[in-house]
Length: 405
Image (cartoon, rainbow, N blue to C red; front, side, top):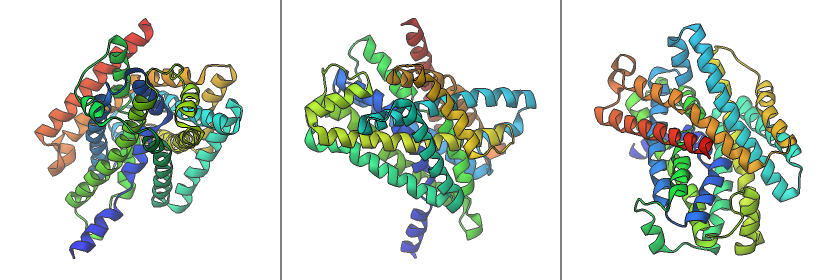
């Protein structure tokens, strides 16, 4: 009986792993490698803190969808008048496109590093493969998409963890990195970027919709409390995996690339990894980067579709969404923009949308008239509010420092 319950609980895992892909997207790869290469183990504690905050946010998102039967976008669309809905959709759509642009660019860089594919063509190929991935979900159901995304996560893990075997970190230095500290103003800016990019607005919208369709299993005799328990396990496991991958990127860079020139771009990182850790590890890194771009851009497209469905109450064909989201990346790359700089600027645009997703999420899950017996406990609301205030404040700092030079 107990074994049956455990197997049934494991069968409910999956939605959070789709969301977790966004935490190992090309933007996060670039940020974590830069942190380790420039400041060694100093910002290890920032990555750990960011992951803890991500667990809180993603659990609330999943919980909202499961208890209410509506996604965050759907709940906001139900409450807002039409002009406000359209305005809200415009900012959410801008965030989704900016995020998707970074992921497409990351995939294009990987194809260039691996096969010398021109960046513009690489962006188109990345978008096309992402469309195929989403078609799998449409044709065979969400469970098939979840298994496919988990496969990508496994590929990413192999690529990003390979460097740990060749150039393992110093245990003592790694432990000291858990103590909060900075190494000058630039490290504060980078820490703001790491934490600020932790809360991905598009994944908040998407995760709440995934639990509506995947975990609404009350007809099978599962209580909401049982489903929420499975969701906590799902979120903890998925974000632990993403956190380990992000931390591995930082510590490998700290152990092997610290002080090396040229690590401020993904192309430069690839070259330094080749010289310091060998061509094999560099190839695995590029393959993992490609998997990261393909999987995360698929998630971005699905998030865009959910935002439009919830706020505009319209369904848009996946092909149309792909075309809309890939055009900015293709145009920017065709104009000769530096790819890694494009990743950074996309994170700035993304940060503008964080309050619009995070604040309503905390507010809605704290409302007893909406959540009933599953309303947030006071401690949960306080913790979530602290996360919201911290992330928003750091993004304000990040935006100021970015535009102030």
